[in-house]
Image (tube, rainbow, N blue to C red; front, side, top):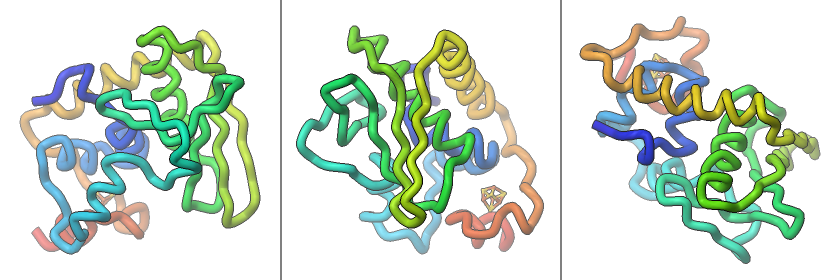
Length: 165
Ligand code: SF4
């Protein structure tokens, strides 16, 4: 079972997308059709902005942290989501915990050339702490959370697993 320090960006992303996905992932269930490299990529980071200044946060590894203390994240989707923002706030929370005063997250969406700036506010910090607690609570459940609706599952890497049980 994972503890608070083990909670990383992928757990937060799955918490916001689907609690069942989080539960399966945290218990080591991996979609069979995903290659090891894709799994590793998902576990570490979605895509990297630059590899110039990696910061190892244990469960999370940031690829770019700029001189003004903003966390940069490059996303493969077309626009901002609650999950993306929550993930960035999680990284800021982890940075603050080790004494690095992160200012917030800057989310980049190259496909649509959009950028979203999310400042790390006291509310964001409280939410980030609550998200970690929520991850632990979901993962501790004895049975897997229910499926989302079929349409909400579109594109999920667990779709074969969930819908062919
Ligand atoms: S396939 Fe659907 S229910 Fe299963 S983990 Fe993905 S989003 Fe959740």
